[in-house]
Length: 301
Image (cartoon, rainbow, N blue to C red):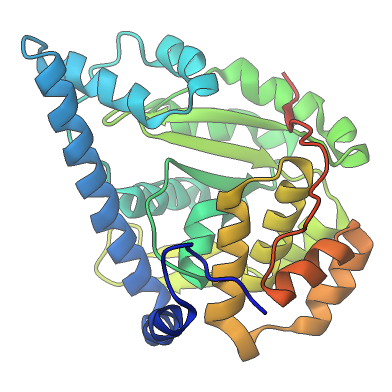
């Protein structure tokens, strides 16, 4: 018997929630997630102001940006954001994702939105701490990417060069990801970029990308990983570093998409990626009884 997504939600109530989620378009779910993020930021900022009543706006913005980061991210984030005149304003992840997508499209750099934003598109709406993208970045396009990002984002160009150098290792070892991060200069919100290493699964992800139309929003279009590929990618992350958040995202997508999913595709790639057992557990609606050790996913620099 499937377990509920949340321990305090009976399955019959969850069924009603899932039915409601199926009526919402991906665009509407991202709009609701945006509202949730804004509310979370307002609450966090109220707490920061209470603890630091004399802080000026830029200091408040800096503290809010660091509070969004996980403990292991804060040192790097603080280094890159030091001296950036951040503002204490609620972040708009949807507008930010559209802005980044537009910058990448303008440079003809293929990209794919993955992670929590893709999970919202296909599953339940929720807050997100960052935006995850996969880039199909050719070495010759490195300077174009740096030029596209440098005005609006804080990052280290050397991180992009390092990520490109490590692509062959990432291709050979799934536990390694060639990646770098950047921070929005207005809000300090983190964007994680993962470079496609050319693995067959990553090629398939790009081939099956979905284009969402946000008419009326600056940027307008957003290229997002499919529901099936989001499930498989999150199972792969779960295999490397089990987390309740990843598992709930998988369950939410499975339950919201239900009959719309290409189950044969899921089984095919789960077998090729070594995820067959995890997928079976997921389809049963229950986490693995013994997830085993929890190895850490490593950045390559």
